Image (cartoon, rainbow, N blue to C red; front, side, top):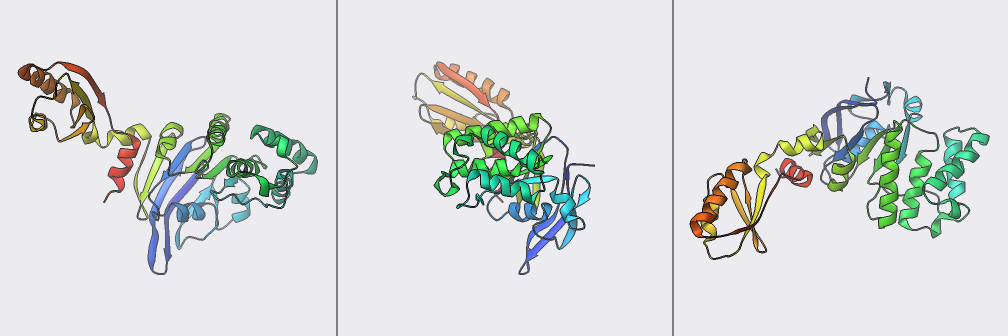
Length: 306
């Protein structure tokens, strides 16, 4: 039994299929990234899994509990931090935390201690009795995350948790996500920040036009597009024809980057040998030579471009 399971989820709006037979399983203790272009079906899928909307067909379970058949039991197991901070602006930070605790049925004596603990963790204890309408976006987002943790859920859904935030808030939230995962919490992370997903996630799923385009660890996904491997080389002179580099064996694409050349191809070792031979033939000295594989962003673009 996985922490989260989606099985053949389908959802249509006005005859258009927003989510088309989506299935995946997330194990307990994973940080799972959910990536996709705008309109790809990320939000609809997440809303079905968290019980906000009903699927037209298929099932979603939280720790084995069906979110449609037993919505209350399923929701008690999760915390949700939406992208748009939904705290009450005319309440204080402490007031919002107390309200969240009451909704989840956290006992009063336990609640008081948890409120102060979580506000302290997210750097808000000194503003506990200030109204939220005076908070920055970063402070509001930190408060939303603290509210999502008030019932100590085993599974946390984070929707673009660091989008548009200041550097301090981004760092604090990412550090807390890592710490929460270290103590065993499962994190479902929806994000447009591909670099963030690359650093944080054990696995990522890429959804495009309602379908799962790929699902695996970031490194394994990168390995699926070997053609974007490249070498970056600079010579002591530009006195040669660029076309000669482009026609070297194994080179599929050539780009000029300042005083350097990036040569793309599936076998960097072969290209390096060709470049070294080319330099000797042209009387050139190689000043630098580096190899690099595809980034997760390049992988994402490759998977969704069509």
